[in-house]
Length: 374
Image 1 (cartoon, rainbow, N blue to C red):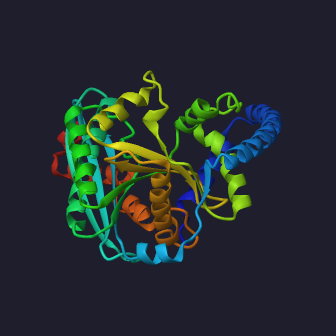
Image 2 (image 1 turned 135 degrees about the vertical axis):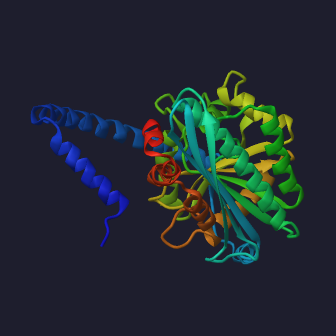
Image 3 (image 1 turned 30 degrees about the horizontal axis):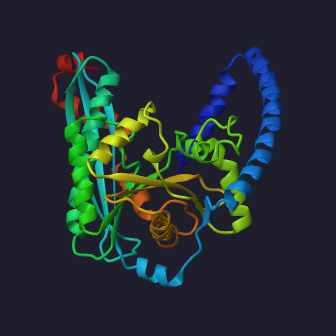
């Protein structure tokens, strides 16, 4: 039976460990034991602090249980759902020529829940002329974002005609590189507004949480009552709190949805880009969501063309998260099926890009020409 990717990685780690100088390993192992002891003490302190914070946030209604609602679930099982995602790989040619390989996927379940939704995939290869890999990757990232937004528009056009539909984006609604090109922002926001005006909600499903907006939200609203200095990021803060919440509630849990620009300072790096989206008519609300004790924490984002009250936000996020958790997340999984499929179907792995480059692109060259490219 073939080894899994994780098993291969474990074998490689062991090989690299065994190849390291024994004396160096001895020193590092001793240091690692010391650091491990310190980490245990630090984690115990963090756990105690997380318990106090959990009690405080629970009492302030910042933590919300996601209980199943049978009537709502029966309705959501029939609504149209789609998902989009994109990926790319960049390889170097010669003379400043780079080759970018793109994959963009669209998943569509037009008639509601199914384990076999419609899958569409686009593959693109672009040549890029630039000096270094960083620039090639920046340009490729922008191309991918344009392609993803075009896919969002095409998917929306296929879903028009339903009273209530949802498109899940694998990632944030405001793109990770924070592209500030006015033409791109105008195109993306107009696409999102086109979706919303056709009763299609655009939802961001964010798997990697790297910022600290929730900490800033708590500091603004409860700064004098909370000591958050020891937490460096939202994931650092919420890991213990949401685990405690799940243990006590017995249901998936999410945080009170918030509007980012209500508490970000203008000096914050993300303030400008979110302001640009808002100036183009798109507000972003988000919440942190943990479905099971062993799962990651996800950020769920909602694009809106109107200002929503706290009660409206709770109602909307209850629907979104019930759709994600109770309809589209299969047993044993923590992420909804459309997101999993969108990611897997568009994913261009490094090895696949290299095979295309070395065995297809360069095959048409003479031996002398190919030598210059390798």
